[in-house]
Length: 421
Ligand code: AMP
Ligand code: GLY
Image 1 (cartoon, rainbow, N blue to C red):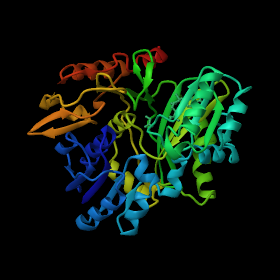
Image 2: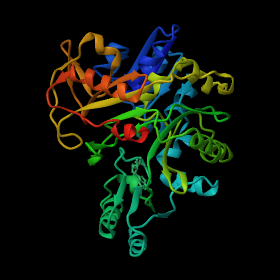
Image 3: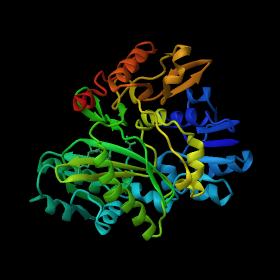
Image 4: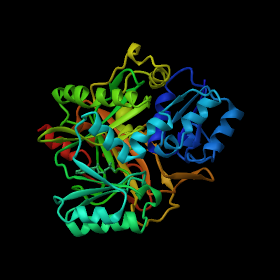
């Protein structure tokens, strides 16, 4: 089988390494992939957002199956376009990807179908939003409606901060059209849990839970990033909570999407906060999370491609999905300075025996060398019987990987370890 994977980060590398385990896979095309992914797949310099380019490529190469991983091509209808030319896909169509690409849509969906989430108001003009903020409870959360490279959420500690956010989004158009509407919502507190799930719109099968580490600095300090590390499973997410979420959140969400005429097929990601009032949805993503995928997929015992195809064919209910009982830890190594300014072009040295633990995110291949080309450069994942061992193993491996200006957090998994004790 020839498989096409759209995207080019650590998450896509994890997906590619996993589907390579399937004996029927002969070729994997990555669009665009990256210098590291090039060791595991054939990379082609076609951007994930270039839907026309992707469709042309598919017409020429006739892949048997496509996996569309990032949010923007999903929102732009990449799956619809590929299915139109007869390529079966993993990932939701645009009309279902809206669950991530419009926060106004997802908040209204949750309200309408009684799915627990933060209380909120929607605004389409700055004047009304600023007026509302005069006596809204503080802290508060301001969210741009559309996709904003993960930067569209502002937690405001003061009224002034919230108003500045509104002005930047709605008057200065910091996120372009994504900020034409905003959501202002209640600030929630509690441990955060990521639950990725497979769903074919009839059945929903949650994957192992995980915990992201979004801030750049140790102790969850500093700027937000694309994710600096993750662990799985998430110790806060007990069996009881899993049952409650299945009943109150996962099934109702899938059913709500069906009722709206927007059946969701693919990976539906639930970003949850475990509040005193019970679990609530912070966000939905219409795709695998990054870097959660880099800890969740290594714990999957069953064949990923088989599961994905079962999702496409709506046969998930008949598919056995097994997990290792282990824990996994992923630590992301970035270029120092990220998420602000950083330098690139430094050679990356990865000892051959460590390759299976490495997911490359931002590197390009130059004259047989791998050099840094992005903020987040690579992630290292290790699996072990306990979380403590997994963390130790991960950092041991990361120590042996070298590149200029390497920066990483030293406390990935510590919060989870504390919760276990
Ligand atoms: P998002 O871009 O929707 O993933 O939001 C980014 C992060 O902002 C989340 O992972 C949470 O840590 C935080 N966040 C979003 N909404 C809320 C909320 N209502 N209350 C507290 N924190 C929030
Ligand atoms: N790790 C969060 C996300 O993928 O959006």
